[in-house]
Length: 462
Image 1 (cartoon, one colour):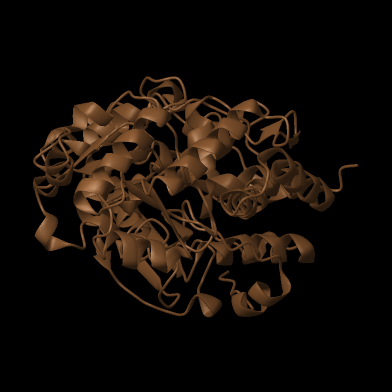
Image 2: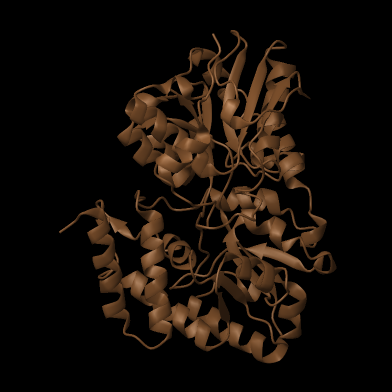
């Protein structure tokens, strides 16, 4: 029997709202988040789009033994990736397979749907599978254990994935999710601007942050362009820099801010970079993307690789960009990840074996799925072997024919696993506010202590 969602809109109002995107609390305009667009449903049958309907009235239950339903967001990113997987599975495994892709307007709609179902004690309103943000899944599995089915026995070579990516979806040693995208941080540079200032991309690879600030000052003095910008309001920069040091804002479940020596050094680097005009802190996300990146203010962009579509909006700069790794405090190449999501089987799934087999034979390592997901949606895998295909190894004209996709997968394998926490985004907000105060003249120690105190209060920690 088919069941209907009573009202996802009502759920969004009642349930806890956690606005956050892939790497930014307001990244509604990035390809990775796609928090825009009306909720709709696309049913895949043998690769053919068959129907569109509002999510609030969409069917969530499987029609038969060959059909699965899935919630996902972003018509230009995640949806094409799911379509690629459906086409692959239908072509190579089960010709009768159908995937009912029910599009949500934003990632928080999925979180709200799970919260509402759990609050009502009725998971029948959930689809078979949901796409879920990495930073939130551990809290949802902890709070609502009956809402999920583990995929621990799915036929997947887990060693073939970035272990940092799996650290989000592996809870108490049990795999709950199958990775979809890759949030590996890239540092993209305008090689023509670097050359104008007397540098090459090798000069900004494997260096210390202090050296980077020095180069950034020279680049600004000679070209008028900043070497990097960031959203100062929802600042991802300290988190990424900290992860590249193998460190976290949390330790043993509590905030690790006030006495975190690496974080103190990072805040000092950020202040120095702003003072040297190497770094520009934008007022908000749209200012960051539209004014500083698309507006051509910067010679460098550092963020999760989902920022690439934003960079590519400037046609005139095609062929002028290349990517590399991050600087670190002590020198050497740094690696981090920012944002991303995975697929999870819900407690309402009546055909768990089919769901596991579908995920295992597509996002579990299929080159055909990942090649099409990259080509059609720009989704980059964290599966190491899939990242070595001809499609991934091809040069990208916009990035001076550099094979950036295989390089991103390679860099992703080196991202250190650091402690994550349900309060990741709140920690980011408090630290961002502390950094702004430091830039305006306040003391680092007192500001970080204040940030930690505020976070502990929210977490209910004495």
